[in-house]
Image (tube, rainbow, N blue to C red; front, side):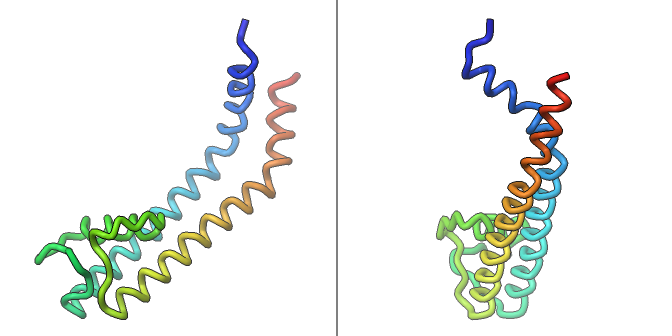
Length: 126
């Protein structure tokens, strides 16, 4: 016999599977945003030549990707931070876009959740 809390968790598995494609698309969009901004940060570094504090002398794309991920997730470790106006504007735009992306995704999931839950219930309860 399965205890009630475990039964409740097991009932979520089909729902999570049904949301899987939406969650993968969300993650892909988030990754694309981070990669695009990484390229822009790298271009800013080439153009301004010192737009970031505490970055290596010859940074790689991974350094900019790291900064982009820390920025888009609003984690903000502070180890690398923008100094130039251009880099600060890019960081602000990335945060707004990242938070906006999260808001849109949660809104879409909230809008489709009742329909998706009804479908899951119909498929799991013959």
